[in-house]
Image (cartoon, rainbow, N blue to C red):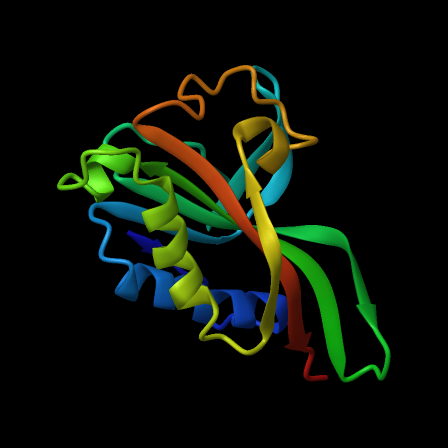
Length: 172
């Protein structure tokens, strides 16, 4: 499912363009793709990434065993500008993938294949300047509580993020 925002503004508008492109073009089914997540404190889980679904409800975006993949965006708390027209934020596009569900015909660990699939889609968006990859739950979710995440980065699961700088406009 593609969890979109109605009438997105600013950074959410650019994120939703990439989000919808990933949902439409990756071909990983079934998949959940979320926009920008929020850092929320859960009584049971500590600091976790959650997506606001509306009516004061948030959805935990960590891996769902029934899906082939979960994709979501984490932005930096600091957004900068040099001209008050374009703003910039460091953003991670996080992918939590079940490699056997996404690439069942590949006999070896298909981590590079899914990373290339994702990068091909993301690179089409000129407002996102890719600067690298992060791999593994400890690195991708640095600052979040990952104690309750059962599916570590072992076969068939793969957790990675495409990192970069997102450029966006705020129309006032």
